[in-house]
Image 1 (cartoon, helix red, strand yellow):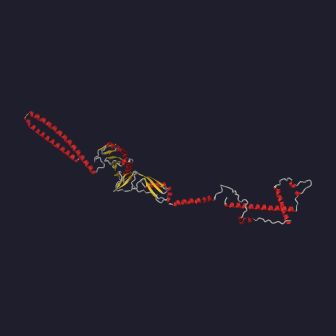
Image 2 (cartoon, rainbow, N blue to C red; image 1 turned 180 degrees about the horizontal axis):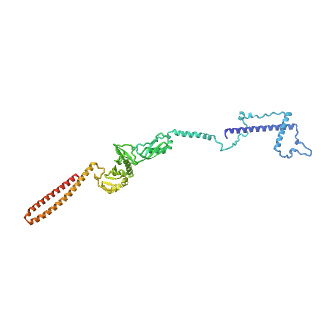
Image 3 (tube, rainbow, N blue to C red; image 1 turned 180 degrees about the vertical axis):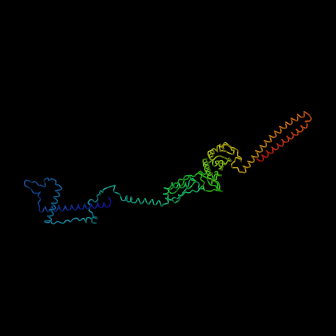
Length: 456
């Protein structure tokens, strides 16, 4: 019940009480006027004695009177009182109550409440009745909530204060974190986190994945997973990092910063060789980090006859040759091969099978052209000397056989007679010539061997 209804309720109650009092006063005056008139003019018939009835009727038992009869008696008494007021006793005129007086300020200020001091039982309706403070709270709640929300959007808590990157060194590369930046709305970032992460990965070829998180209300942390770097590419006088996804970073470096192989011999303008380089990058990327760090150079050795050949210059001095299509699988056994070599260095051929040979200028793909030419000349001279020695040996055997036959014939001629003396003399001179020839051929063989040794 609100204040207006309470006021109406109290006003109606006072009005009813006023009317009740007026009715009671009027009835009292009527009863007084009735008693005075009957005592003056009309005798009481109930007190008269009738023949055969000596008892007082007023003392006899009367049946209960109904409300109708009581009202009729009151009307009859009012008529008699009115008639007596005109004839016998002058009575004071009773003023009629006016409704305007009931609503006047005086009546409201001085109410006659017979129930004053008693508690008024007001109707209780918990569903409809709401206390004023609850109504005010319900009315002000939307405004308070909207004020708090608008204050948050304006406050520094809704703006990114700092951005930190985890998972990559700042010295390796500068990441492009757009559209992520300071002073942007944290509320908007919450709805665009997936788009921001995708944008960071697309704008940075060295990043494999990125995760954006908000900490301490307005501090953003970007956790990235970079691609592994497996080597370098040299262009002019600078080196460029080469990643495992075949991406070359556009960050020139004057000197090599890591113990990683240098890829060389690939013509980047040639599509076929560029495709071979992609295959080589995939093969080297399949190796473990400890094996990659043992590689010094990765060289492309393809030619018109075979465009799949590759050579690896190792840090320990070994040279590995093989095919691009199988070098990744066979190089995974390199640490086991080193244990079997027991410190020896040479050529490890992985083309058809895996076997070890001594390294020389002839089979070393990293040897210079001058070394290769000198090695070929020495090999040719050695082969020529070997062939000359073999031919001189054959000629000396032939001369020795001729000398033995000549000596046998001289012996026979000396036994036969003097005429054969001249023949024996000539044969002896032939033997001396053969001996001198054999000595000359031996000296030439030694000289050739000395020359071959000096050439080596």
